Length: 287
Image 1 (cartoon, rainbow, N blue to C red):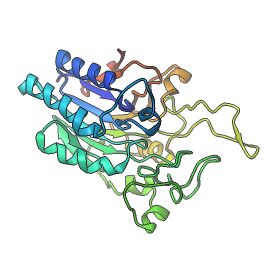
Image 2: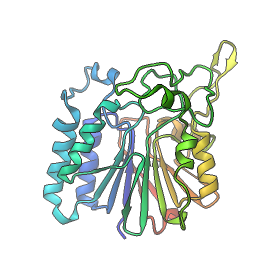
Image 3: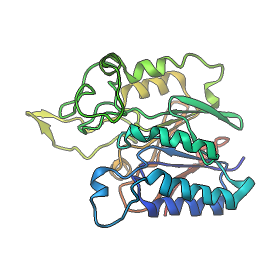
Image 4: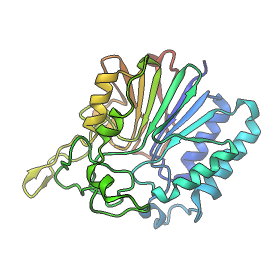
């Protein structure tokens, strides 16, 4: 089996996307997994360092992936993606519509089969300090960390029922997956990292809110518990850009599950390259 690529938190950087596409054409991976925060956020759009098309998905992403698909033909990989907490959910329909061209598959709260493996996607993160709440849910209860904004506040680009906003949790979503005969044949594409692991270390040292210390771990307790209980083969994560720099680690394990983080806080593109048949030999490439 050919290697798989995992990238995340590109945040609309056209240079990173082009580096990824070039590497795809050279290395011909079997699958490419995009873990969310793919689009330019508001601050980036106001920056003078890069110009973004108004319709970033259609005018850039669809164009670039369609071009490489045409040139690679039968070597073109399966491209699986989810969105992240910085991506407005109003763009979700555009990603779904682009599936018809065969350039990618949108797998949030869904799964597909790639070879011998079942790949699941899940975009939601626990409550954060940020105001866009399209991809935020309570984690295991209606608790929020000091300094964070609850899912019942902030803004959304797509309407959601009050009941879902108030009572939905990441834990309930993951529990609803039920049971499988063989979790060791599953790969999970998350945006959030599992709580208190090498992949979940934010630069919040010494910070307080109303004299209450802020937790430097901001990942999902529900995701950690899910991994501990179900033991999928591989889980993929992003969201916390600085975690690898702070911990010195881009991977971790919970019992038999391999966990990889491809978020990166430099200008380069980070690719985690792994083979599901032998995930212990995964590598992280900085381009």
